[in-house]
Image (cartoon, rainbow, N blue to C red; front, top):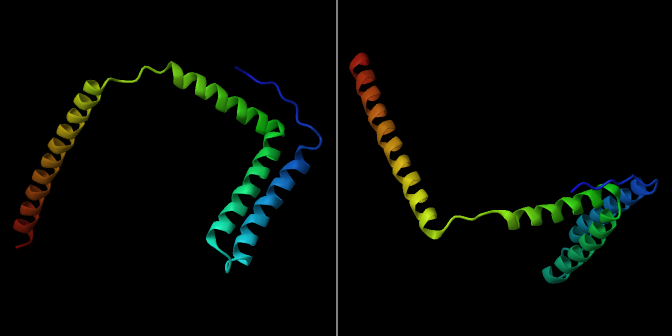
Length: 120
């Protein structure tokens, strides 16, 4: 799925507006630090939603939304492993990690012993 979008001459203005909204959210959160956290979070979420909607109106925003929709379609096509396959794979990984840990512990002990022989 490919989306052909052309950048509008207003895209840069929209991105500047998005940047300003994000900056207002950050500065406003700091400025209103004496207010309730709930109100500040709601204000930030409202400004983020407006900034997101404006960003989606740009060419890059439309391409991003097309990517998200295409990703959801591809996720539906994935064949997920069964519970038994997941448990078996996890056990193999755990066993391998324990084996490597034992090998590294043995190598470390051997090298430590050799170094202690060399320096004494």
